[in-house]
Image 1 (tube, rainbow, N blue to C red):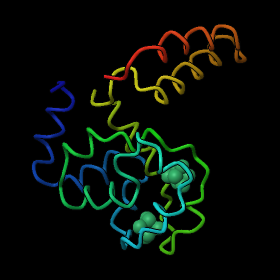
Image 2: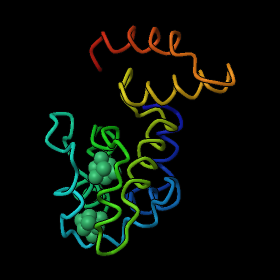
Image 3: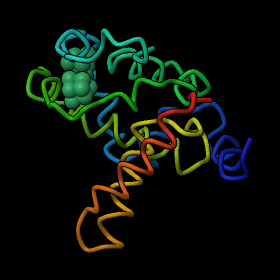
Length: 153
Ligand code: SF4
Ligand code: SF4
């Protein structure tokens, strides 16, 4: 485990919900989920093989304290920000933002999969835009092609 990951695991011991509430952006919304499944059923990409756990399952796992299962999941990286879930959630849970918040937290503590494609796309896009003042498509595509041609580990 990375240092940061170990520190967080020690700090929150068996309270993964509290860890997410305090550390992941908008994580405090997870407890509002009533497990109706509308978000997962509305998600246009959840049929993809990378969706091991759609949002409803991620939220259930967090509340069940399944830290390893959540931090090892791919689901939060598969979100395309279409907002179907957010619009339809009867509890008004900002599902999109929570999913990104969990992904960012996993990255911050060193638990995001190496070369995860959508994480790499975000980082490449951000670096490219902030470095050049605009997106340089040639450099961006070159950087993405190099990583996307390799398996995710
Ligand atoms: S739609 Fe909202 S309440 Fe229903 S499972 Fe998803 S997050 Fe929970
Ligand atoms: S915003 Fe993300 S999680 Fe929500 S329905 Fe769209 S792809 Fe699925």
